Image (cartoon, rainbow, N blue to C red):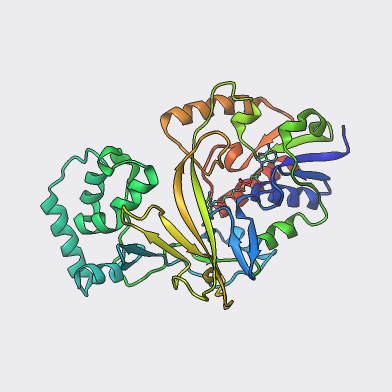
Length: 367
Ligand code: FAD
């Protein structure tokens, strides 16, 4: 038995939540991360007084009161409400698809008129058994919404033509017949005042941390320091890819600082035409109602993932799901290692979900 009760690999939300709970139970933890900072993908870097979301825009939203109260013990949230807009060749539309969108598209005013318009377009397309993503989308929302707001964006995201993508990718396309631009349906939503780092810093207060430390570079030495390991890195890497590599989708970010106080008037603008190479521009200051003279924007480009790139989104198709299952069988047999988080369990988690998962794991382990 070593000096620490737990070696926690990864200072993201899973690792930090677990560490905070373990500390409360009097356990001693060592948290390591291969990056030079804590926070994992919710990490923000301050530029010109603006919290820049370095690994993609993060908006906290949940219906779970327990999780909302939990995060509010660390930080106060502002009243930010996610209302992205779409830019289609210079035409601006509100998202998610709602009465504001329909009014701009067709001049319709009442929900009845909007429904009739969509139904008429669906009927005209006459698609009975959608054979690909394009047919699926048109059969759900009609041609106009598809052409202007779905087609180009989706093709950029997947790097393939919509007619060459399977229909099942889009199961539903929510349309809202009210003038409500709030993207999320959740009861609680906001951005932490002072940024996400405040949460993670508070969670890890008083806990030993080693940054720029890769678990695999000194696995034996590090594991020997603690009774148990909580591992939030890639599960296939842990097992030396013995069954093969799990696949991901990645993103490339291009950050620019500008000498203007307001570049695009909204935190999130989706570019839904095919010609613009990026899918979104994020203007970070609007997440926190910033009043600085300068601004920082990030262009987001979808990208193929190859080993060494940041693994952002797991690809939960049959092949990868089967592969993960093989690794999970090994993981389930471990009695000194707990796998958690989005990389450790090969699962897309929103922030509130990964915190909930860490609380469940901590409760199981610590009581
Ligand atoms: P991570 O944050 O990835 O933490 C894992 C940590 O482990 C990393 O810091 C990594 O460096 C470290 N690590 C890995 N391997 C090793 C190793 N071998 N040695 C040492 N350290 C290692 N959620 C929302 O709720 N709202 C949003 O708007 C939202 N937007 C998102 C946008 C993007 C582009 C992405 C990718 C995700 C988004 N999420 C959002 C999800 C959110 O980022 C995750 O829920 C959360 O970050 C997961 O935390 P984690 O601890 O599991 O993983």
